[in-house]
Amino acid sequence: MVQALDSIRHGLAATGVKIGVVLLGTLVGVGVPVGWVWIGSQLQETTAPSWTALAVVHVGMIFTLLLIAGFFSFFVDRARAKKRERADWMRGMSEERRVESISDVHPLELIIFLAVFIDIIVFAVWFFAFANPGTPVGQG
Image (cartoon, rainbow, N blue to C red; front, side, top):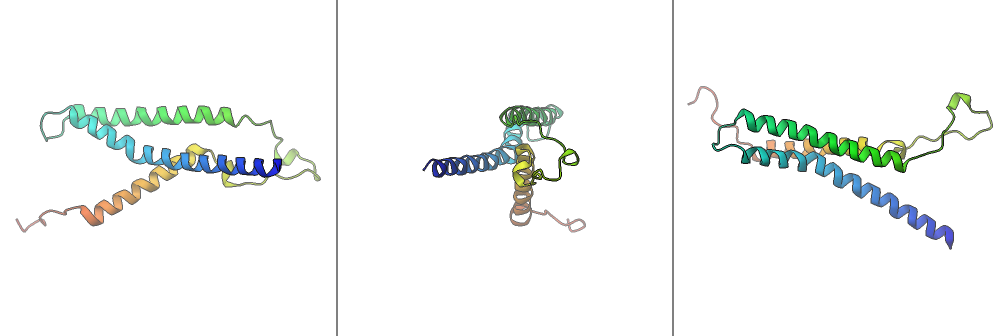
């Protein structure tokens, strides 16, 4: 009974981590850029782009992404306080070898990968479905 509860708890924790990675990937890939573009749009009075708005958008996005990455990395590293493992070449022949898996990848890497993947999909949908190419050159 205890083993069953432990496996259920482990499965729920793994599912929670995966849902968190998807949510943070969406936030990083879509939410941060859209939020800073909106903030930049509030800083200008006309529809023509201003250097102030562009600077605020770029600096704000970079600062926000670094803040999210640092915050998340700090807590993941604290949660992963593993015992020190010996390098593979220092292990005895009878010791169990380490098994590489996707769980060994830092969650921040998964979030960045997912954010880039979401951005590519959103751009492709926008480009092929909604973008207006305008008037062709020379037919004006």
